[in-house]
Image 1: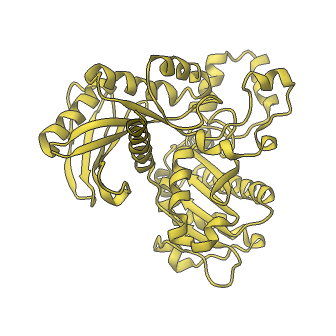
Image 2: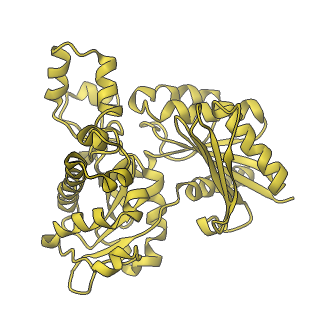
Length: 396
């Protein structure tokens, strides 16, 4: 029986996991298994594959209405099918605030601090913490490590994180944090194997999924990013509005909209869903004949182009553009629409490579390389768990 690390990513209706052997190099290719329980609470379904992607289980579940029964099912499957001994668990936690600049072993004090950040990440933080609590009830003696989406961006210069607000508010932690840091950290870790020496130069990574953001990197460290105090800022997303004039918020409040309804509007009813009136799923929008669906896709691409310009300004130019995450890795038409508007930055697309979802999709005539690189947040979480707990063991 080999020791394993379990990496968990809990959402409102899903629990994603990957299982890693602690003695192996922790890359996506070395995952023992990965999968999810999705569709909770109404139509829960489990899907599990091995490290090579071969499907091991795909079926509906009964009596799985939340994180604890979902986790109990996953742990039971691992014990029954894999017979690995789970020696530690790592969790993706979206907001670490200004306190948590690196992964940390979770205890009651850490949980209490992380609870304070729920208002800043209401779609994610409660579910991240619920998974930690659920696992603790099931296996109280197994150490858990929180890995933060905000941590990667703490290398940004102070000017990149500051709002034009009174100092008293800045002192209270109201600043730009940035998110999707685990994804960006993974991409930064593999950039040299794709880009060679260019990995250390001016690189913009576009993490495009239901949540979307971009990060400007130099020497594979975060210089600037599109998200700010919360994961609501920056690009338009599946259901989130992205950057919006604060005056719109004030206007809606003055017009009688309640804070609860306003929160629902900005987080749950805007973005691709709000503009299209059809769906927040890019696949459904691409298949739709509705003019509003096409408008939503056009606006999504336009906002990306605008933000590339801003991040290129922060870097002083552009040497490489990287697409990642669900839309970035799998939707050639979005990449094409973005790159077509970036010729002025030296972005020249190879159409055939792009349509084939190749890794390098730029042609030789452009000065900026364009790549499609799959991300793996769970692998980064597992690496952090192994390194942190080995460090603790060596220092004991």
